Length: 221
Image 1 (tube, helix red, strand yellow):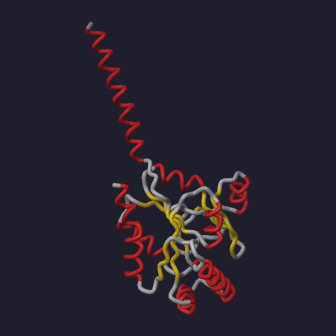
Image 2 (cartoon, one colour):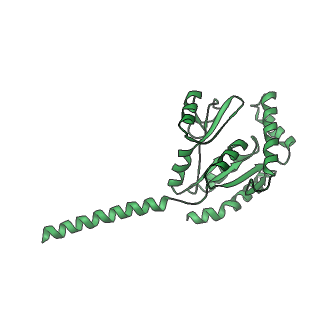
Image 3 (spheres, rainbow, N blue to C red):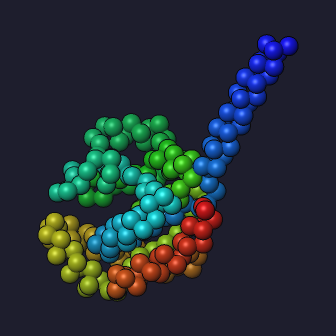
């Protein structure tokens, strides 16, 4: 009888552990929509996202894109981008491993499907920072996302910001401004984006971004 009771206790502990693990895993899953943020290069998306991550470190996770371009000063592999060779990038393309991908100025950029899934499994909101063609591709996928566009107050102001970075040649600057003009025009089409934020003042732009996402943040908790 004592042995039978001992076995019952062991079985109860085992089942309780299994249920606890399962419940913990269930708690970590989230059905809150991923957030797709787009906007021209130099518009300030990275700064806004850095502030968001700093204020809500347990609510959001950034989907790190793959790229074939070389790292800029201060950029870290696996944090800012997954820096890969053209061969490695094309291998992922052939395996249908990207949610979206594109080429710009001779370099490839892509969002891994697995990167989005792994973040959702942790119970956090996945943020995807993509350009116009990436938005178009994601909209054709089955990803149920919230779309936000960050735009500059004007193309002239954007040109000043890009010049100030000191990383652009005249040719690359023209390409970025042409792409920015296209992205802004696309954002003006009805139903493309759920929200548009004009980044004229960083504090105001961030507060608007936070207001948009606050309901989802509350859902997580």
